[in-house]
Length: 233
Image 1 (tube, rainbow, N blue to C red):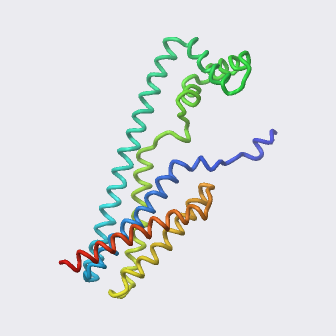
Image 2 (image 1 turned 90 degrees about the vertical axis):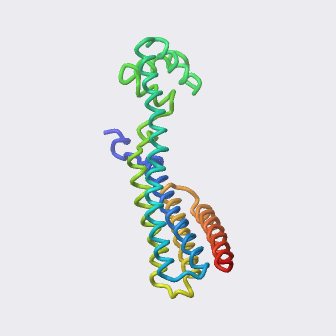
Image 3 (image 1 turned 180 degrees about the vertical axis):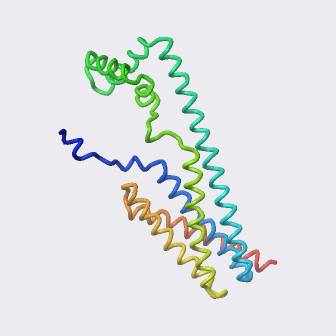
């Protein structure tokens, strides 16, 4: 038995579809909800008002993430399907030209022309559309758009992320909501950045620092706005 069958490889890029949506959803859930809570709490609102604002932010944010992901990824899917339909027609109308086109792609990648044409013919004989989709259009099973998966993943992870700063509000005294929610949310963001980087094989320290910096900036700005408007009102 060949070694490749004994030791199948699992590449990190296989996770790119759901990982992007999951990290985006959880990060936005923590950051937007924590910022909203900090802004409302800084305006000297009651604990009940802070909780209502946080829950409203969770529900609205989850629905917004789901709708936004579904619409944007559906647009990508529509574009892919249109390209595939055009490619299917070209393969039906002029298969020899398409075979040579595929061969030239392999020539540019370093194969000798005779070998490139042989490879192109063999791939075309097995599955011409898949070969052209992958090599000419850059569409593969890994990168293909999945609107429903992206929408559900984003909504779920947003809700989970948003629930964390809400939990901090529940257990915090009214006078300490701002510092406790801010510190805990920065910790959650740092942990999320590290987990996302680890899952994607990226630099953990860089990802953690990046998400923590932007989280601190967002909460500082909303706290400042809440303080100013709370004083004015």
